Length: 360
Image (cartoon, rainbow, N blue to C red):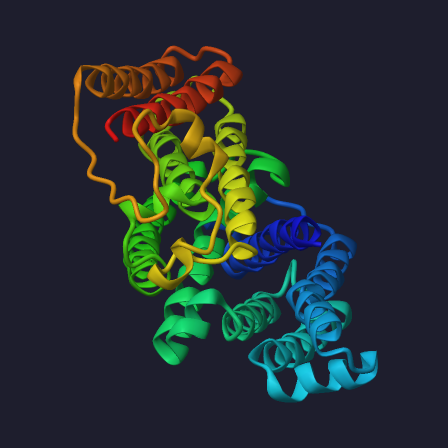
């Protein structure tokens, strides 16, 4: 059940990125962006799919309560809808989903900026409605809700245009005018993503290094390491690609490469959404990560305290990680096949991860 919910969460992130990315780009004057074509049918399907996938956490709670309390199914559904934050969140989400669907169905958001901006506004409301039932909100209601919602909003706002331009772009005209506003926009979004992410960690993972003992902490570490090649590709697409536009370079393939790391992060985030955050009161009750145990060479106990200390092996692995960061950038400058740069990016994650684990 948990794995199924993780899949629905991952797909939900992709849906929101497509919706936010489409509506944001259609809100911008056409001379400030490359031409894109996202059919109305696709936007409607993604909107409906987002509504259906939003049931995942709600169904999870209903099934758990129904088994635990042994009351009727409809009684459980009513109880969750009326008394649980996940029920309130779902009700608001579905309301905004219906309004968004009608807006897209009855208007041409691909040609009329006003309706594209209205659709963007409803998409934002849907994200904030979903944030009401997040992990962070359950631990610290309003601050947690705000940090989670702002975090995901800016992730979608930044990642969405990248996915759309990577996969739904008609040409790469107006690329320089687009980069002129999107590059500082991306830097600002990444700054807010980082800030809100740090606030969320204060509630969800107050003891970051010790969380590595658990599966949640291992996944969170991998997610953070995936940000490294993602930022590298953002640098390539935001700055280095300008030099090659006049030579006929297709920037779309580099955006597709960046989108692969975005999708990888969405996948790990979806996995995290269905795992218990590592607090002091859960560490002793939660099984340690098999991955951690396979790489940890010391004596293990449930109350182990982790103190990373660099050694020759970790220094070597970190150096390799830096080398492959350089190779990723160098390969983009030399116009090597994009798949090679993607491979280098994942090697950056692997060597960085092994370097951290070797320091424990």
